Image 1: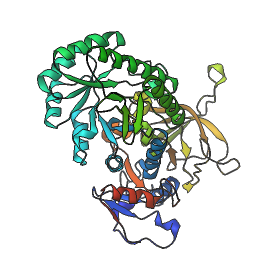
Image 2: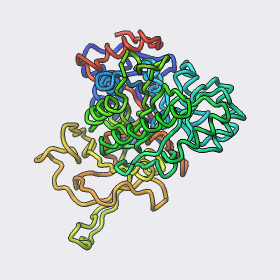
Image 3: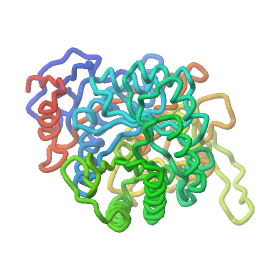
Image 4: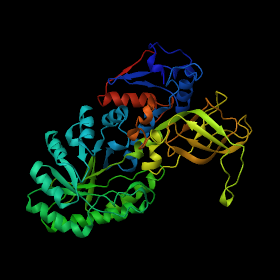
Length: 483
């Protein structure tokens, strides 16, 4: 995909509509940042692509990433949960610009491997802003974490305690307890988390080994759909705190994990505020953390949000590379229409759409172009074309990825315009979480690239000038282009 970033940088024209085609800033990483809405950036990229004349890979799928949306999510977090420090889950989306922005905003980072830790350290983040939130680590990883000066990690089993004693005895430990994650998209309790009944023995063993357990963590599962799950989890954490106190521990850290989504974030935040007030009644909040009466160092509350920050910020554009039309119009059992057409696009389950398999996501495309003309409306539900337009009738169809694997299926049944042809484009919104982080080059296919924008020229949280000013104030090297 040939982006504008491949061209010689020249001052943008006065016309505001044209400014989205030229970078407005450049970071120390060499990434160019544009200005304008996601829709404007989609159009700007497609205006540069001629599928009939471009080089091989010239029409590759691509992401538009709205950094202003990430900033708005951060500001919403500050408003709703001002006393809980977010430690971004790096595994969710480790794009360098995402990490650089969040580092500049002052978040911590939840890392699950030495590779993720090194990535964050390479962004200039201090080790004190990292939690090694993996309860089951390879011995070599523990030794490496010690050399990286990582001072905080989780555990949920006896062998991990022995490992920490042998390879990193000065590390502060956090007991991860099992919670009810039955209302989450991705349930993690089948793999991680100690049942409360095991907590006393684990803590006693840590005491015998002279290890410093400083708090309790939990995770209600990724993509939690029931805010009340957090109340139950905070109650379990409170019980673990009490168990620790009986053994002489004085915990000063509560890690409320992940599971946050944009759509129900306000409800989750309300439940968390209420639960913490109920089960930690002595808490007295202070900027940057919280204090509990009687604890000399106070109580700090952190969280591990991932998709909350990035899911809505990324949109993925795909090109229709092939189409098969069937004359057999049969109905399947239950009266459900059988696909009359099969569309093949240039990204699939071996690429960004691995989220369908690993993250249990259900995606729905919107139409970007029809007969090569831009028709995208971000204010309409899928397929995103206004009634009465040249889109014509919708027909039942399936959507497939580009590889030779028959498992590479995006949608077995959806409805798209009959006039959608080879060379046209689709867009999938909300594709920022657990997508490009697990994309492969299977079949020799190139993974989708990312084009960054600061969003529209608006006021308030997320305005381009606000984001740039905040980044510079936090020490991020961003050079403005001439305007």
